[in-house]
Image (cartoon, rainbow, N blue to C red; front, side, top):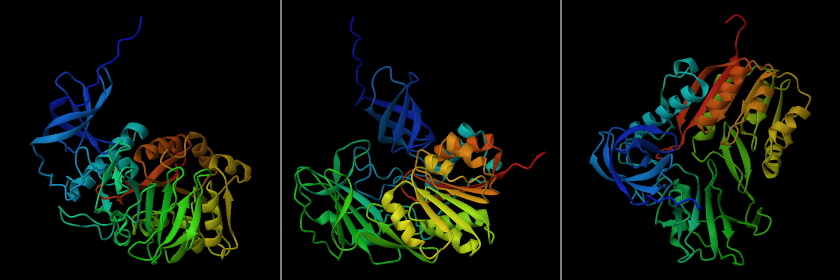
Length: 443
């Protein structure tokens, strides 16, 4: 006997009271029947009409948008961006919240993840609950800081116009301007030209230099357009078969600036997207580690060498730094960027594979900045065995951070301090820097 197909609830509307914020840019609500709703475009305490966007009868939860606000929160503002809201661009989660309220919501998410996954209160993590804005982002409610130095535009296949993806969708919201895009990105005028044949266009405006770059991803069989933007740029393309990034015109990299040094970042390579983020994070990491001359350090998931360079500067000629990074191009850039340091070595490969092969049994300091999934139990267990006097964990996902903190606690480490930064205004994303140290015997 065939199982009966479950009925889709997409489009069904519920009048609900909005509960607490949840990780991912939405709030939790329940229908009168007890069905859980994850509701976007709402704020805690509001009463709204929520329209289901995903889900079916019997599902553990439904996704929904608040399409009518019956009782508004005092933290609500009218979304400044005309492309924000139900069924539109999915890039910003909190355009409808005052800046201070956005940071409070992010703080509540971090606190909830710490408690649920690491069993820690903010006080036990050495955190006062504050989410700090990036320098220059203290803007009045109803205004939007222009901070995003790297924007990946999707291209509407029918019109060739650039836009951004709708939430949890491949559908393109065509736009004429992205409000959170940095001035250097907006100056390129990507939204004002025809990109027919392209899958996506990534625009990059480097911090601390005038380097501008676009990376084109063509649809299969499409010819690259002649790129004439509103200012000079280098042009790269993503290969159809190998997926690599290849030079079309200009430099195959941009020059970024942080901590008094210039870093080469190859096309498609990782660099923090907020212009103040790299300096903010280096400062937080170095203040937490307090490096001493002659110490040894690991920089894991090191990218183009941002933290390795900062460590090398502070450890002096007798110190030593080992960086590990999986990306081939990033390793080439890191080696170039740190060529002036005799006692810095960069190894290519996954951390969990390379680190055991190094033969390192002890180290003074560790910095790790893993991808969104975190480092994981196996890697954290290995790191805890090295006896570092301090560990700096840089995290873009509070859930992964909390899980890995729990693993560090199993390995005999405690969180000394935690700092949380709002480096992605208007979105649900947040950046954390946790400083860990060994638990003293008898403590």
